[in-house]
Amino acid sequence: MANRRRKDYYEILGVDKKSTQDEIKKSYRKLARKYHPDRASEGEKKKSEEKFKEISEAYEVLGNPKKRQEYDQGARFFESGFRPGADFGFGAPSGDFGQFSDIFDLFGTGKKRRGYEAPEKGRDLQYNVQLSFEQALKGAAVKINVMREKVCSNCGGTGAKPGTFPKKCPTCGGRGQIAQNQGFFSISRPCPQCLGRGVVIDNPCSVCRGTGRAKKTEPIAVKIPAGVTDGSRIRFPGKGEAGYRGGPHGDLYVITRVNSHSIFKRDGSNILLDLPISFTEAVLGTKVKVPTTNGVVSLKIPVGTQDGQVFRLKGKGAPRLKGMGKGDMLVKVRLVIPRKLDKEEKEILKKFAEKRKENPREHLKKFM
Image 1: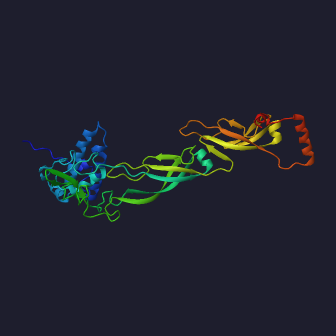
Image 2 (image 1 turned 90 degrees about the horizontal axis):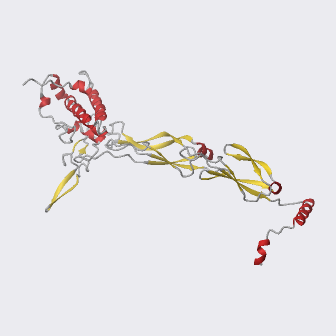
Image 3 (image 1 turned 180 degrees about the horizontal axis):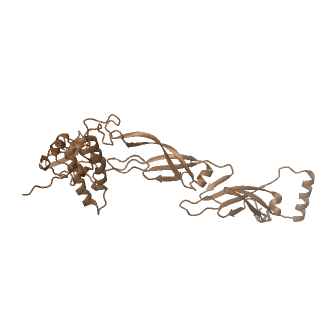
């Protein structure tokens, strides 16, 4: 039988023969992230599985200094039963699990496979943001200091001391479960040594103490859309805590708290304003200037305007969320009655009343 052409593991991992072990490991982990099958689309999954097997096989050799030396000397040890994916279906060595378990702990497998936990979304966070009345109307870019858990930068999320890796649990064999016979039944329970994870860490990371995660406070810029109200809840995807075992980040929810205004009030997308007018303005009619949140406008007060009457200024309200236009401004007239009159003013009003001979309570007579 003709000799099979030996694979160039250096070429597969994108390194050269002079590369250090750290450079080989770094290149492998980068490729493992890129070609992990559970990150591929359905159409690309088979291709990714093959590529992942290939780079796993290469790292099984080059990641081990002794095997690398034998490989460089031309030995055929690498054909002695290496079975990528024997335990996981798509790419893990059958030898020492220690060099590879971090990849499955970091990325997960998409499904629970023999005790290894699936990727899990990170925790959602919620923060309050204080806004002025004007910021709520016009929108604003604000920064908030968020404390959240991130993947530990020292160990890359493995939980193990840099240069080491989690190992397959010797108690459960990496399954995460152990079986106990109860008469005719066999009951499985989480492994007490690895607590169901399937891996153990002999040398924990000094920074995260084996958790693979570290808390950090950092400023995050968020854009508040125009038109929010007090208590609006805005979602910012992926701004929460880091996921577990390669899962996606959680979300950040911002709750808006809006300061009150000295003259304006909100009713949904409408803005309310009380407008004081005098007795004579209400009786005779006039034009008055009215402040809005976007400049001053002129409002006509008809003859005989009544206290409490509402005038609508279309499109002068708050922006509606999701680009649905603007609300209106509702101007409510408040009649200001003079508290003191001089003698001449009283005589004028008496003559006015005698001439009008009005009785606004006429409709109540039948009840008296």
